[in-house]
Image 1 (cartoon, rainbow over the protein chains, first blue to last red):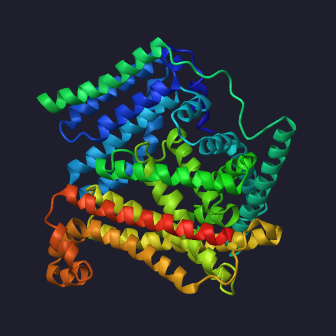
Image 2: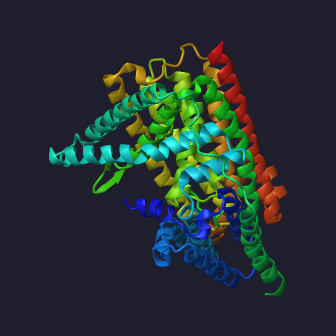
Image 3: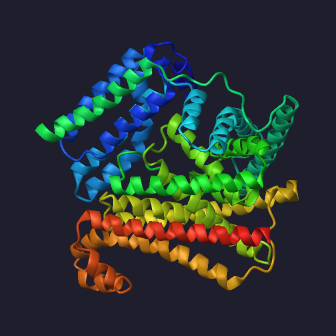
Length: 238
Length: 302
């Protein structure tokens, strides 16, 4: 499955990988806000921010072209609306939409490709996002692939039995979905039982709390100043 | 429909992020009370189920397929507060890992799908889910959840100044109606199949709900959503089309009669004021949602 690439990238050992998740989250937010609120000199700003992201990807030793392809997932939606904008007589705005959403997606890819998801969620937890929500998200991510695989097996098995023909297909699909639901529910109960047996008390154990060191502070300052300064400079002089 | 970053104007995404944070925090507390914390694995695995459900295709006409969105189904099985949390977790994972939907736009997507979408889907079930018209309520809930989410997303895009011509708007609204009907049909057949497997899966709302209160709440929700769409679309989208087509005067009477005060005050105003007006609308819906939520929880625990 294609997402596994992201998982492999996030286990790298570069200096960017080692930075604290919180520093990367804040820098990402600054980057996204600087891009989202821009209204003037968009081409220059986009080019500068794009180079910034490319530098970060090279620094983290992540294949730049592959990362750029991944961020392309955002393009179909953007392209649709760019086309709609174009039809409605506002082609420039459509292009801006596409560029902004693509760069935002590339920034998210850069952060997620250099931070394992558990570390990212842990960083969010220390930033006061409700732990209940984050734990649900972590379980969701953990079992996403398991349940998806089960769904694929069921779809393949149904196709092998000839489910692709006939008028009953709608009800067949609904039945398959209900079975998948019941299996997921049962699986959740088994997981819960197994976790209780291992002493689960509603809280996932984590390794030592991440430490926000001096190098993290330096990274945070430079990584959030860079897009902000580019933006201010372009607003003033372009 | 996941809005990526870069589409929403700053006041829109900022206000929706500010609205989504307390809403999700409140729902997290409610869900935590309903499910003791050790039940978290259930919510996570059911979120994974909704992800996986997208791989099972339902035939729609010739050669096209659709899939379950799942907000209403989660609300019927886990309860609306837990469904909101699960949907929020899904949206967060989609934004982070799959680049489906933006980070700054996460608040907007959460409000559209996880908060208002789920609660709009739960409302008909809550009111009529125990009576004779249970099937109809399940269908209406599924359809309403998709319709409300999609309409809000379009309203937010229009408010942000994305130009959508009136004709495109009409076509997409027709598509939303079709998608809503499909979600309703899928939800009905999956709920039916689930009850055959194990009746306990789907919750049983209590009987004897006040019909009038529910009908008013439902009507208010629909009016607010559609009103928001018109409020955000009327100034540029629909009116410019009407002018092009030479039916401006006719369209104006049709469109502005219910919003005449609105038009006078806001149509010629700057985009910021337009956005503020729209945000006030969203704030009203949000407040209504919280009030409905409170009432529902009080009645549920009584």
